[in-house]
Amino acid sequence: MILNHLWGLFSHPDQEWESIRSEPNTLSRHYLAHTIILATIPAVCGYLGATHIGWTIGKDDTIYRLTSESALQLCILFYFAMIAGVFILGKFIDFLSITYQSEQDDHTPRGLALASYTSTPLFMVGLIALFPVLWVNMLVAMAAVAYTVFLLYEGLPILMKIPPERGFLFASSVVTVGLVMLVGILALTVIIWALGIGPVFASS
Image 1 (tube, rainbow, N blue to C red):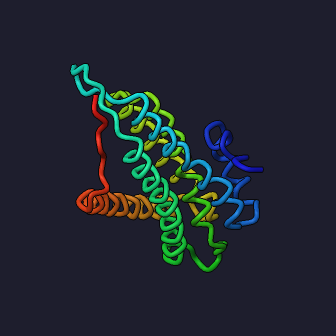
Image 2: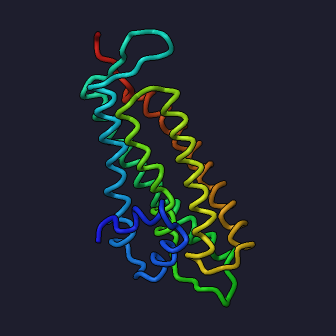
């Protein structure tokens, strides 16, 4: 079933990771039926928030909105950046598993599944884009990042079937890779904006 692990990752993550591990490790089950769908949440909500609701900054009552064309361009690029980021991170996890898994461990490549399900809170938090208040968005985003890290550290040893102490080191390496990817995405964003594909504000 599509998105059948969504509730379990928030209500009973340990059991849900065990359930994910018992399923066939296929691209369609863990990536196409989860990441591709959930990544639409921040993209669509971001578009609606930026074009129909708008932002206010500080005590300024001015409402800032993007033009429909500009918001659509940015949200499409954001969507593909998210699904590409999850895919690349999953492949990095499989690559790192060579270092952290011993000969006795299960070497089934499960990096894409781990990256897909660990990213769930970051996709769900996209709903907050419908309520574009900066300080609220920042607090909710920080909570989502914290729970994402928790899912990673909790789920990696279960999914990869390795001891918790090795799982901690493995998960820390994944966090490092994720931070490097984030910096790379920010740099790419600057380049794209310099090429003229940036936010265009609608006239008030």
